[in-house]
Image 1 (cartoon, rainbow, N blue to C red):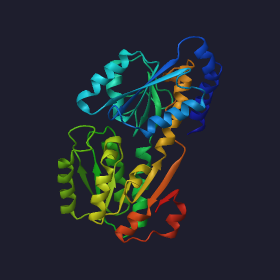
Image 2 (tube, rainbow, N blue to C red; image 1 turned 30 degrees about the horizontal axis):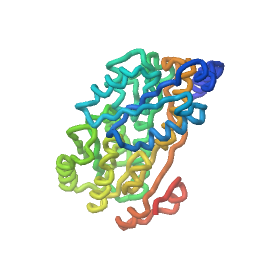
Image 3 (tube, helix red, strand yellow; image 1 turned 180 degrees about the vertical axis):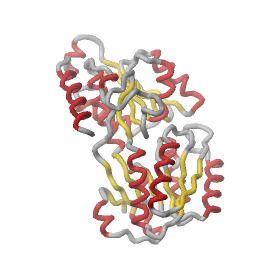
Image 4 (cartoon, rainbow, N blue to C red; image 1 turned 90 degrees about the vertical axis):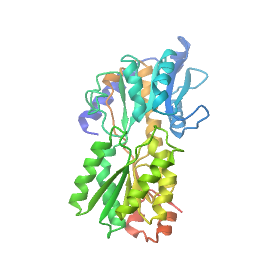
Length: 335
């Protein structure tokens, strides 16, 4: 974060700190209501929702005392708008959501505060006016996808110096996909490599059991005879990350993505923000808004913790030796 952006955020935080404490908020009236909109189903357990809960507890918001969190789940494109309408009908004080799930809520309200975790830049897709001053009813944090795309490819090249042709597996439905693809092409040119783009056009946003289109994409990657695999991270892609990892190991393709859970599901390596930590940090935004701050004035931030995770078990399955210099830089090695 630049000094200017840091000063802007601290100024907002200082103003908010003068507002009522969470305990005083509860004593002065009803518990505050936070709505979570996620991808899944009614009995879905989300580590990100649990992280948000932990973050809110740190700021003094306790469910059953001064806070009510209600989770709403959409299973795909078809029911997102309906779920968003149901959510807003309950009159929440703040909505917290992730990635593309923000769009149906944004289309239905310009007044209810929305806090998001977003993969990519929210300005080009018109979620806000600028990072420093969002200007509307949406704020939050980014997963830093574009900034880290090149570094992931460089790390993959360091681990597999002989790799010349990369396969990129991505979902074109994801709003950050075009810019991530452009950033990948730029770094691949600098490294003297080649790149082939393989879109996985999933029938819905929750493709956990929709393997037919994915298998067709896998076959195209096989035919291209690529040396390594880059997986653009998003929530829906994570739902199939274990299947992608199985494919990469079977085809002996070293792989990289952006969030640690991808490596834990079997991909070789990830480099990116601690996403669970990011959602815990979103509790700070919700706290500020519940105390009276406007999302229009809360700067959209980047996470400060970036982690390198290497799956040593996958490396062994691929017959790769991880360089000691790379192991020394890893934040976590999965055995």
